[in-house]
Length: 586
Ligand code: GBH
Picture 1: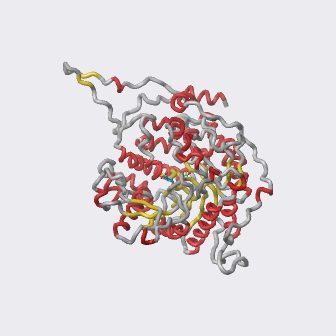
Picture 2: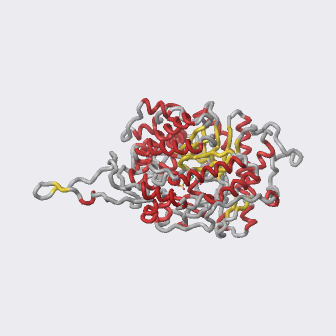
Picture 3: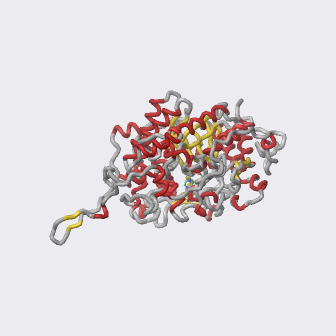
């Protein structure tokens, strides 16, 4: 163990800032012209000769990190049967409600197919903790949480989080005990390759091998996401991360390493999670990362361009390396409802689709290229895709996987869409679609559904919109391809403020969300939409990005104040499971 870490850090260190070929966007400072007309090099453009190893990167860019109390893999113990007793029912009947309650327990015209995979999801940086363990390199999120004051709620860090890095065996045993069929996890790029490129860390490969083998041992289908927002810091600081075309090859090489190591046992792959989200994260906060200059408003679209190239190449590589694979990517966005029946609001809805789901889905499922609204904006600065690139992008997914949490109303910006499109300083530019979660006053002014936690102000329970949403995805992009709801879930309001364990575990709005969501998928299935699986977010409370530990999405509570980080099933987990007990074909 120690030997391989030493080789990794000493032998192959990365030169973080020096020696990189300048990118086209990296405008170097102009030379200084002296009074006598001669030029001298601008000294602020000198580069360092430093060579940094993994440990140096942590020390210089992150600082001290917390360590978990458990630092070796915890063996699973059987889940006591007393923990598997479901809670008493909520105010509604389990299935269906109405006159026949309580004698009829089932709607006989609904079912989940036998091979429908229902599962739970997490993501490496949110659940693993153990951020420095076994040679992991830092990611941009370690900087954001540690260095950028108030970036994360109460300045929380993911240093320890759920300690899933050491507790995965027990976590898998606990989901298996409830009959969960699939576990969707992400692989930490900077564990596998501490600098995002170059040396491969065998200890990280061993870790994910064991996680995957544990899934198989418990009869749980492992599903792997290659990238869930944790860009290796070295790539961000070497060339700007997703802003640079250099990331395309580096991502594809990383994908190759993962497919080669795990592809014999993992059939389900997602390349990237929610590119609309992580591309819109650019520009990263100034002065915490190496500075590269691209106009702020263009940065998300440079990122997007490289995502489409990286994804499509990784898709084709995976298809060539693995024979039984299903490879996709995870789209995101809420269902878009026009606020009024005006033609401007209809156009706002279309623009909202075009700049969120359609930004990726139109190239991948329809044309190989951007839709007209995105193209009208990006053609001023991005190179057009070559014919070869378009051919690679079109058809680069075996399914349509959508993270479909909620729905919202869209409407035209004040002053109208045309004025917004003509004014790049409008805060809604370039999408130029406004969003609200309340019906218009003439429609009563109610919220679209019950609110989740105030720290997740983007999320309302709007489950009755799920069937039309799934139809829309089928009709617009998926066509004959299977559809999966690759994430959905709910943050029970103010859960962090509860202190009595049994009160935390009884989560009525989240439970009704899962109940009604399952009913919505059953309705869509009965109407001919080919939904093949769904993954609930999340199997545990975890580090919710900027909301850190302030927002809880878990179907298991984790007591973060106890160094052993014990897990407890919430009522919603039983609600989710019960839909399959009742409706899945045996
Ligand atoms: C998923 O994104 C993520 O994949 C997952 O990691 C996350 O834990 C889960 O949701 C729960 O949030 O604060 O107004 O800027 C869901 C889509 C898009 C929702 C970005 C939050 C930020 C809105 N996310 N959005 S805002």
